[in-house]
Image (tube, rainbow, N blue to C red):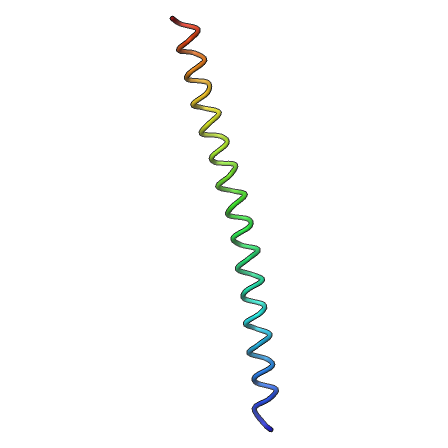
Length: 54
């Protein structure tokens, strides 16, 4: 019966790491989305300036 608290502790740290990993992936996903938006905005600007100059 001694190892039951350890098991519960490990389970909790496992759950915590899962939640932490999820939070991190959500943040990095948002970060990459914003990077993507910036690069597509830059592309749009290039297209616009091309059509203006021609």
